[in-house]
Length: 101
Image 1 (cartoon, rainbow, N blue to C red):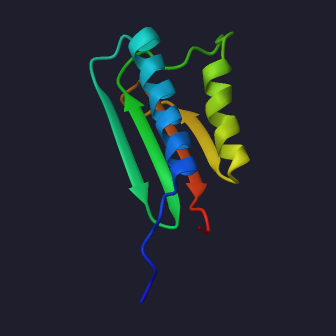
Image 2 (cartoon, rainbow, N blue to C red):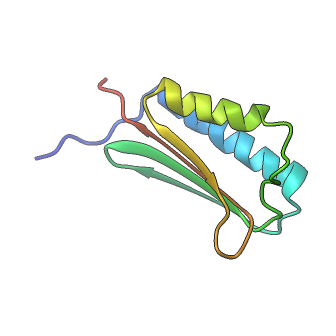
């Protein structure tokens, strides 16, 4: 029997901040009509935020919010990727291992 997955309060706050930052970027910059948030818990806590907006410009000069999302993943031994889905827009994939609490 496998132990149930557990997301502690600190990890939940990180995930909430990632979702807030990605959603805020969508609202402020993307000109999107759709935003999808998926949260999955297995051995990892995975957050995926996808919009159908303009995407991240190549000449993006301000990346403090994106850097913050990356840093949160790095601090927890996880990964963070930003990409453009086939239909356009922005996809943020953030994943960190669950805590051993």
